[in-house]
Each structure stands twice: as structure tokens, then as C-alpha cells.
Image 1 (tube, rainbow, N blue to C red):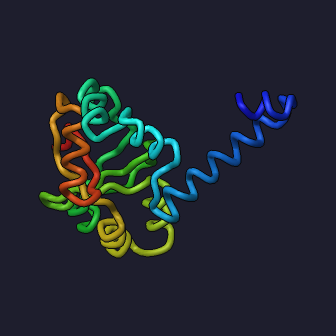
Image 2: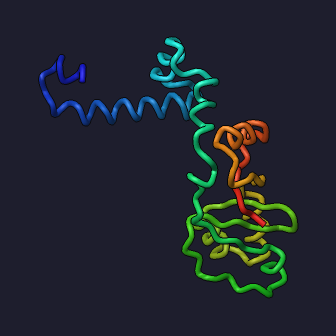
Amino acid sequence: MALLELSNNPELILPAMLIIVVANLTASEIFGLQSIFRINLAQQGILTPKTLGRILNRFSVNAVLSKDFFTVDATTIRAGKGVLPEIEAQWVIIRDQENFRLLETSRFKSLFETVNADEAISTAIEEGRAMVKISLHATLNEAMELVIMRTGDIVISGCT
């Protein structure tokens, strides 16, 4: 809004928004810095870990859980008993005994196109992100605490 008031040119709003988004992503993802907006809110006492926790306590894991996944049993594929079906889901969950790994479907499919099934499933398990179980009724704050405690592992519910 300030940009419009200063320039009196509405055509500058979209480019300015894009620049702000790119700058914010660069600062947070490449340099690991918080955005200027979060810093300002924290300085004003509006956004603190306590208020963030209160906000996250309002929502359950079930409310935001992506259910677009397909489960594959690694032992069955290694033994050659399982035929790899056409997977339409966004994510593939690889079950390897008691461990679960998460991998994007496009990467999972590309592995099977380049090497044999045994090597592909081993690579998928290595590259996949570790998962831990959490209740569907848990709050997002509980999920975030578990992710922080587990140093970035994926939290998923309903995995059997």
C-alpha cells in the first residue's frame, strides 16, 4: 500500500510483491535468516514462540494431513513378488520392515527406470525421508515439537 501511495502507479505492485517474495525466500532458505516481517513482529511482541504455539494448538494434524500417498513394501519388491503398479499419488511411502521412508513419486519412478528393482528400492530407502508416527488427534504444535526433536524427520499419521 505504501508503494502505491509513494509512486501513484498501481502497475508497480505486482513486481514489488514478487521481489519481496523472492527476497524473503532467499533470506530464509539460502542464508537461514528470518524474514524482516517475523523480526518486526517478534520485536513488537506479537509473534513469539508462545503465540505461535497457541496458534498451532488450534489445529489438528488430521486437518492438514495430505492423504495423497501410496504405500510400497520393500521386501516384496526385492523378492520380485510385487509388481510395481502405476502410482498416481504425490508421495510414496516405502515400508522396509519396521521403518518407513517418504519419497516423491516422480523420484521413485525415475529410480526404477534407471536400475534394477533391488538397487532402486535400496536407493529409494537411502534417499527417502525418515518418518515417525503421530496421532491424528495431535495438534500441529505437538507435531512441530516432534519434528524439532527428531531433527527434521517427517511426521505422518495413520501409517501401519
